[in-house]
Image 1 (cartoon, rainbow, N blue to C red):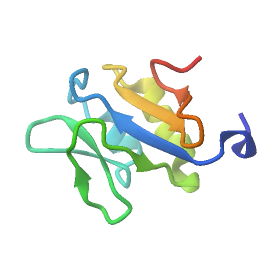
Image 2 (spheres, rainbow, N blue to C red; image 1 turned 90 degrees about the vertical axis):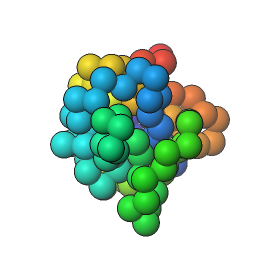
Image 3 (cartoon, rainbow, N blue to C red; image 1 turned 120 degrees about the vertical axis):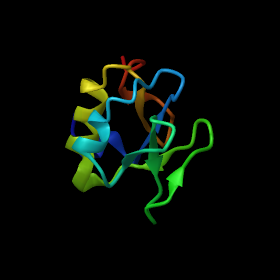
Length: 96
């Protein structure tokens, strides 16, 4: 999938499914972080942990591969990457 087809992307984590393995934080520590509760969360562009349920953060184009790989390798299948324009999931458990 080419970047032009993707448009802007955002990512969110379903903490109910998170296994706390931390693979996402290893792939893209700029985007993901494990909190004190042992679960992964997305971070804002200012490096702030976003702990609200369903919180999303933009996917930096420079980190698209790392975020995509995080979604593919996540043992909990809890990382969702979707287009901002139409909210269609492009990577993650609900991707077509």
